Image (cartoon, rainbow, N blue to C red; front, side, top):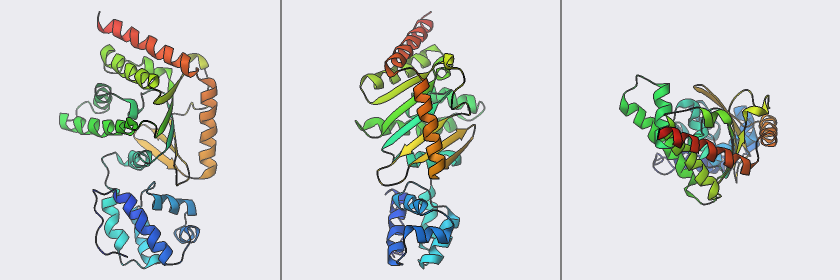
Length: 278
């Protein structure tokens, strides 16, 4: 096992996961065996090794003890855990960056990956009305960095179900909303994303509790992320992920078709454009 620290500029979480795989295999342990010693599943160990889950310090200490790695993982855990995102979202954001497919239900806000600069700024200013401008700028920069995930022509596949409230809530004013919805429409027209709108007329539905994100990976089991106001939880238990996947399937069955959804998005954007020029 190398004794030098990992370079934080070189995907530290992925490097730490690779080193975990090497150390585990040298110790002659399977993922399930190491997981049993840590009281977690073998799939959780696989996600640590793939870099889709964060290695928390308490796990690093136990891994060093079990695998005899002389404090290597404790020394490097802090650097690997560094994130520009809030604690409740950091692990999900980093998993999002490695996902090959993302399915998301956003009941009230346009999803972070689809937000414009002005929309994100209005949201963060509403969350923190007395924050210094520099704080808001840092938050906006971190959010807009997620939009780079769509720079690849095909990966990740992004499928969103937007609650009609996300279209109708006038965040930042008519001009800001028109720009935000036009960006979504442009991504739909370019076949980069798939979007459905869950209309108010749908009434009661399977995800009344809030937002939902499902993440699929090439080399790791799927995850589900549930987010509330200032809170969030990432799930890897197969039964829980499957239950949330069913919830998403029910949402897509209830939502408008992609073509009808695009028509509604463009109609609402046109209304905002009219209001902005009055």
